[in-house]
Length: 486
Image (cartoon, rainbow, N blue to C red):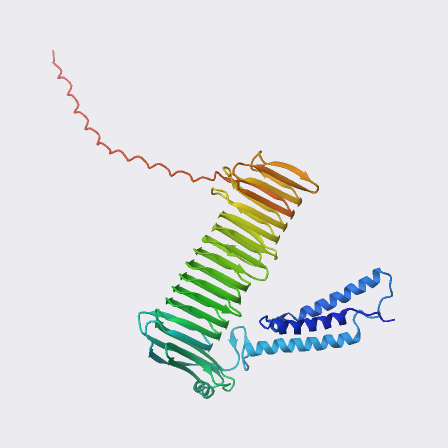
């Protein structure tokens, strides 16, 4: 008798879930996830069948003749062909048809360069500039002018010059004024004999301009503006500097977003890799999935970071904060600092003021405090060790516990240690009313001294050097008395 399997119902549930999510959450990139991660379906499929075989074996039930039925193999082949075709088509469309590349070397065609005709248009001191560049980089610079100046370079990869000239004719850059809005558009009108057109634009605008940038693929560099800047791009590295207004960046893919010297708020949304923000006077909000490293330095207003696995909030970053996929480290931070993460992550923080609240599913936490007064601390770890370093003059009520692990008290005898089943507890008062709570379910706890917790007085100035008195000249020797001959 052929035994049934739960594979069929699972596939039906999965298909229904995909269509339901697409209907109620069209903003979720579900199809892109399927294009990339569809092989996990085969892994899950094989895992379920393997579990079923083991279950039949250990329950002494008759084993099936084959682990995977013939019909399932047919479905697997179709799934593999369709998944590979969809992924390959998406890559081909993304990299443009007619492109064949090995490493960074194009195998077919060659590059032909053309100048973008210079355009100048009167705009006033505070225009709204909209730039739409399909493929290519854009550099926007503010200056003490009242006109918008557009120049650039066009690179066309084609089989021959005639094809490139034809593509150049169908790819024009237009600059138009509608009221206070200046529209700069660079788009190719249709497919020009499989030629690939890349347009890099240089745009000079008045310093008071607000700018909207839109593109599909190309880096963006913008600086020296006092108006609001908004960037929407499918794939772009974004670099901004010396901005007075708000900066908003939304990308589907980005290798880096770097901003320095921004006085307004910064809002980042979407997906990408690295983020670098330095010397920011506005509030920073980051919402999305960034797989690289996020570095923050000298942020004078609140910081909010939210992803599907991590939530981080703090008031200011006078020092530095680095957030990666598996680590978070920071020094000289102003709380309240709130961190919650469900992904394995090691935390290393030093000198946080106000309060610290950390909730980690898995990872080690190291919290070092060298300054007084001692902030309120609440650290909860499901699996991982906790190390707490306090100033020797810290005043707080400390409570530390572990359900499965040991506690090392290298701080003070006023902290009393006790056993609790497979774990341990450490409690005591060091004076004051500040509460310091540390707990882990699986892992050890260490409490030690970090330093005196006071600022060392400056060294007294060195006494002024005494002027050297020149040595006195030696006295002339006294001549010996003359001898008198007898």
